[in-house]
Image (cartoon, rainbow, N blue to C red):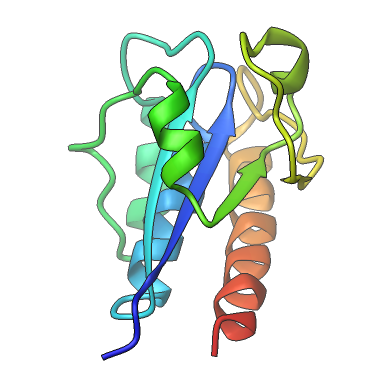
Amino acid sequence: MEERKKILFICVGNSCRSQMAEGFANYYGEGKVIATSAGTRPAASVNLSAVEVMKERGIDISGHKPKLLVVGLLTEADIVISMGCGVKESCPVPLLNTIDWGLEDPYGQSTEKYREIRDLIEEKVKELIRKQD
């Protein structure tokens, strides 16, 4: 059996975009990848708007918890993806070989903006999973 790739999605708060990416990657990459997410300054909880728009896609991230980005997560990951939120500037260790998706943060914006960002993340994750075949 082929070993599954470990994907780490990172951002500052680990409450929205990285949580959605983790949810999509584990859903679409089941059996191919193991995804997790973390933040340099994790929020107290996952953003409720992110939870709601993910439910619209049939993916429940309501049980997710923001996690602190630690060196062990970085060294264990095969692929590290930043959501595009200045995480490199706020990270206590150098982030080498990190792919930056450059996604806008929908925090405080309309539900429609959350859906727009969710859809962008979904497409990027699907492409990432296809590349693992």
